[in-house]
Length: 436
Image (cartoon, rainbow, N blue to C red; front, side, top):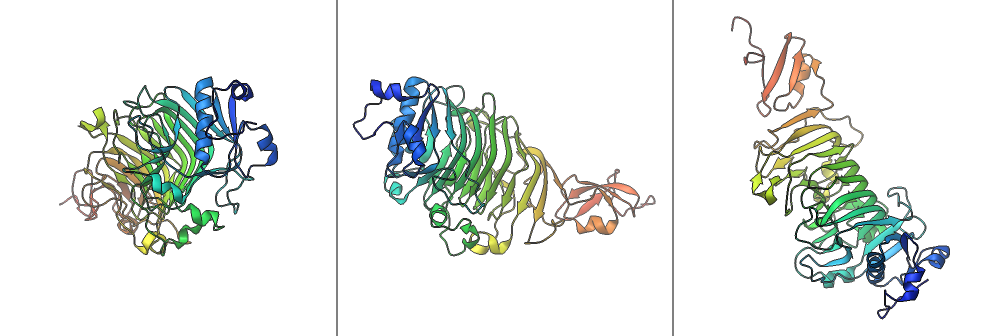
């Protein structure tokens, strides 16, 4: 084990000799004693970001990757890295693929609190806000480069949770704008970490009396453009932020990713990017629960936004759950909207649960009535495709939705969801007859 203080030389021969051929191992102050005995670095519980960064630097110097034993790692400061990027607590190596592996995955919602026995938690404490500076700092980011595409660092991140003491300040937990091959698995991000650390495993149903999150308190910001080969996110739960997932990039695949109790659970293209936002973003079995606003679709296109429009988002089996009394502040906000209506494309199939212990709604609109969503094929999975006139009229339809009306004996297409207007294949109103 290496004893770390501010004078430790990471190039010291004893330090080099201690490392595993693959991993540099770090233990927290509350990690099990057996872990501490084999760790290369042991954190003290104060400014653990300094110890972790020394381990990262050692990885960079010797071609190794980072392994974190179960425990709580206290993050007490952001620093200026003088590489052109925002202040950050931890900075990853540049121009290489880097792996950060946590020992176990903390199963949020299981009743277990973060500790050295049930996962790896990076815990941003209140002292860090004093060092945040201007702009939006990051808990974890890559070394800043001209662009993320092809000169950023690749990243495999697994079994790591990040908790903030609060979400009242601008901050990004994970900033991927200078990474170029991203694979993140098994992560829990919490914007109201103090409540969790105090023993309240799921405090977000009590958001009413708590401070509102800052809109720039962000769980994950995705890449700055094209990805090589792809950008993948699996089993991630983001709770209590201004924006849970700032989604963007190309070749993005999200599986089993859930946002809950945020201002916005999902925003798409709602950050500065450097290259292409053209190729598909695909979400499979993902969800957005109890967010004030439904997803926002901002900028998409190529050349850092100079060429705008036509990027696609596909949501397969997406779940919305929004109950007025459960969202932050007790009032629901916007439905899904585009900042430039009609510019995005895609396919969205979803269910919408409007209340506790309720069936999925067939009559709840999810798009703002300003032209937003006009480029999408939207399908409420609770809607039948064949049924009676009464069933059809009970639905809130979507532009282009098709329905075979068994009472009228013909296929119909919705041409105006707000006015509930349906026409037949010849463009006649739904109830028109042959004589008409």
